[in-house]
Image (cartoon, rainbow, N blue to C red):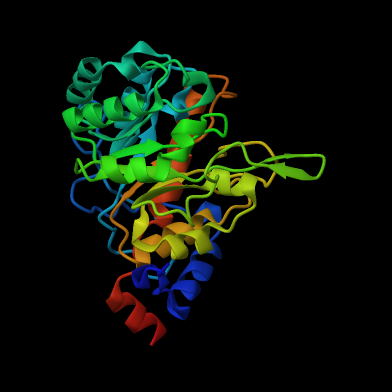
Length: 336
């Protein structure tokens, strides 16, 4: 397996820029929008579709360009509010798009309803998360392959580029046995990318048990496209930076979240846990990552819509700030 040389191009200059940026106190943060491909605020009722950054005042003049990748909001991030609410918040806060978590909300299962929301809010659907969670076992039927076919059809209909899929549960023996070759076969039938997501082992009383087959980690299996979830790396106690380098160009989709290393899948706001969220974003930006970064956080404990939106805004600001690509000229002039 070959590491992506683009992702490996992180020198001392980038590390120095990161250290300098972190030395700036939070009170020095001031609006300094850097537009990339549009005016801050974007189009549509909520102003979605922008790619603006807020950088610390006094930080080195390096964050002058942004990668081609877009920052999307997973509709799972607004649960228990509806899929429609996720579109509204994503557009108003300035996300570039949404990832649809197909679950028990009927709207999430209906491509026509999703198309109406997309058109009304002026914000694209960038990915479809197939219904492969425990609580979605009966959504779109019970045949796992039929679910992936339907997810692909919805993605093609709505213009999404990616279908996110979890590896099979161990008890799905027939599905698990054919999963790697089946995903490869389906990928050859469409331009849609089936991005297999990293999961995690279950831990109890000092023991680890994998609930997934062929494995909870997609790194060693022959998948063309992979999703890297940082809440899941927290649970599995994996190194997401190492995983990103091992995956190379197979890494096309990121679920941005955080965790504290417990056995719980926490999906914290990035920056509130122990995962190297900032470092991964900077690594991807330096390597020219052109996939999609999706904020997938847990806001179920939010006591109000305002608190939920504040957490989603914080996650977006963190992601945009650290996903700024240092310009080559800036690196040369500042760090020799």
